[in-house]
Amino acid sequence: MKLCGEIEVRDREETLINLDPIQSGGRLTAEAMKAVIAYGDGYSVCDACGKPFRLDTIKKPPLDAFHRDLAAFVHMDVARVMPGARRGFQAVTHTLVSPGQPVILTALSHYTAFLAVESAGGVPREIPMDGNHRITGEEAAKTLEAVTRESGSPPPLLMVDHFDYQYGNEHQVREIAKAAGQYDVPVLYNGAYSVGILPVDGEALGVDFVVGSGHKSMAAPAPSGMLATTSEYAGKIFRTTGIRGDRTNRTFGVKEVEMMGCTLMGATVMGMMASFPHVRERVNRWQEELENARLVARALSSISGTAILSEVPRRHTLTRADTLGSFDVVARTHKKKGFFLTSALKERGIGGLFPGATRVWKYNTYGLTRRQAEHVAASFREIAKENGIAVM
Amino acid sequence: MVMGVSRRAVEAVFQSLFLLTDLRVLLRSTAPDHRLDEAQRAGVRDRIAALRREVDAIEQELLK
Image (cartoon, rainbow over all chains, first blue to last red; front, side):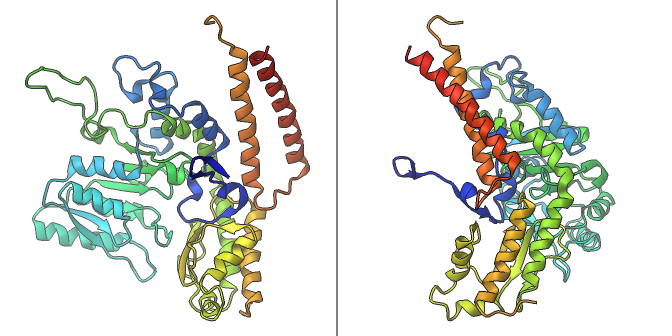
């Protein structure tokens, strides 16, 4: 079915159970879809924009209140909507990092964290992961100590994921923040896989910045996200322009430099805002989501030659599986080769896995109903049995 | 009201799209077999009835 011209209608979510590792938390709510319908035009939120002409001050639609709600949602003082978590990282690195300075990341940091450091001229220094693919407070302390000793002063920033994109493992944010606090190093919490799907309390974690992704975990259109901080850092990160044109003498009011003025002016922010009441409530159902994740992980583990590479029991719905000893063995002689698995899943109404993947692959069960999760679990076991793999 | 504007037609178009969106979301939550329980079936019936009323309003307003 064509939308227009050569553009196909995307109906993956309506026709399949989608296990794509990055798409599940960004699926829109009905409210967000309605907001996209009504606010799809470019500068649609600007109808009633008046002095001081800035997104976070618009009252109709109530974007001013939404910004305050976002800050409260993650227990921080001030928040801004951003065009993706990556732009949140960048606003912080551009403010705090000078060229040549080391910035502490982790061995599991997302590439956009690295690019944010690079764009500020910083030098990445990674905290290594332990044998269970986790970033610990102890290793963070060692890296802080080493970097401080080498450069003669503490680094200007430490960035850590609560849950990483490779394994979906939980990392010791509180302990890491405590270690950073001993060196007076500000901490950026990357909540791309947490803000909007599970409760996040930046104050309790002891972090200085909380970054979230609208399109990854807040049921919002892309690109969207948020950056929240403390009142201590808000004046720095959200500093207003002081520049003046040399010929025209023009100045630019209260526009915020790192935001490049206004950030999300239409369907993105309205979708994010329309989903927010649902998102604020759904984080309290995280345990139900974990039960679904564990149900599917158990089913995969019951297939001989299959291992869950993420921490078990699962503490996140994003999971990394190793099927080298099971589905990949079948793929070697199957007429469809590696595509047999995604093909067999599709026949059962399941999609979203990387086509042809039978070795090491990721999936995400977030947002599935229990019935859908049971169907996924049963399907993996069924496909294994049909292909002669022992199932316990 | 601006002269010539059919507020009712505008509202009916949006309301229709919103009702269809609710049905779209139902398709998502019941994929892949779209087997509905009784509460879901009742919800579908209500929305289709409301949708018919909105489409009638559009017809009346725009083709009068």
